[in-house]
Amino acid sequence: MTIYEKYDLKKVINASGKMTILGVSKVSETVLNAQKIGGENFFEMSELVINTGRYIANLLGAENATIVSSASAGIAQSISALIGRGDAYHTMHPYTPKITRREIILPKGHNVNYGTSVELMVQQGGGVVVEAGYANECTAQQIAMEITEHTAALLYIKSHHTVQKSMLSIQEMVEIAQAHQLPLIVDAAAEEDLTTYYEQGVDVVIYSGAKAIEGPSSGLVVGKEPYITWIQEQSKGLGRSMKIGKENILGFVQAIEDFLVHGSESGDSMQARLSPFIADLNQMTGIEASVVQDAAGRDIYRAKVVVSGNLSAIEVIERLKQGDTAVYTREYQANNGIIEFDIRAVNADEMKTIVKKIAAILKGAN
Ligand SMILES: *Cc1c(COP(=O)(O)O)cnc(C)c1O
Picture 1 (tube, rainbow, N blue to C red):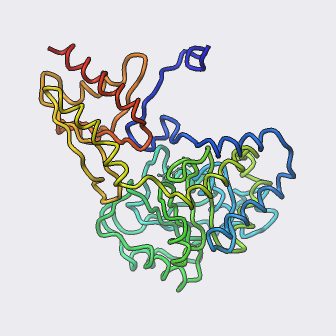
Picture 2: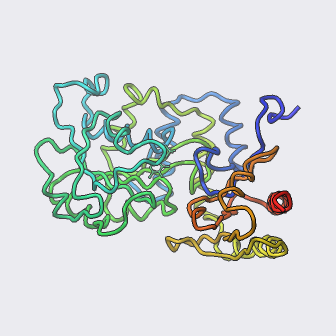
């Protein structure tokens, strides 16, 4: 009996990209092996956390790093660490009214919902969000205007979820932080470059383990001292409810090493894998398929399918999710009659399954 039968689950083909609702990524064989070693052995956990963090910091040329359970946990614990600044009383009483320096300044257009809100993670860490600028604009001056004696840190979200237009750069944010001697946190959860933000002078950089790096459920915080040590201290306080297991720590270190060697799949490789898929799709009437590059200009290529038959793109998308195998697509352009397939986590067999499923859907509609 398979897991799918045992729990009455649908099989899922993920042509939507890195989606938390589908479990984000598949992990490789080498990562699974490292997880197995983690699962089968004991370690002194504090040593495991500290030493794997140092190991990764060495790989990345950073002062220190630490593995956490998710990027969200990284945000909450970094905020708490920068408010408490290593104070043992604060670690055990993170919401104490005795500490009043709790304001975290971020551009208003960065206070987004990525599945949960940035604001809630800041609040979980005991921070008070101060939004600088406007929904569609934030300048360096607008950030600086919000700094008071209550400011604990600055926060910048590097993500396609945020407002990009009329937004100050990370470099400008670093300059303000340094001029005011405030620590700067960058949430780079889904980003692929594990060194650039740290090298630009950011104090604490946060990544999600299962997004670009394709690790197990985990997060990475890269940064300067004493901040990383303060973040590790959170395990005696609010970090306890965000604990990560030994198997995922070891699996994630392996995933980082693999990612640094191989990187992610190149755009050329995606285009090559897409070409038979596009050809198969173009055999059908009522749809027209082509290859398109990511709208934000990243080296990601997808299949763009324009639907023009009896069914709307929205209906085709819904029917793809039904049946024994649910196919999830990128739906952002469904209103314009367009379905996008992101094949980063889709293999050749799965593309054949998608083609068959679309053929059956279109046939059923005639
Ligand atoms: C995905 C994401 C997160 C959260 O990452 P998790 O590891 O799932 O907690 C945080 N911030 C941004 C911008 C994200 O895209």
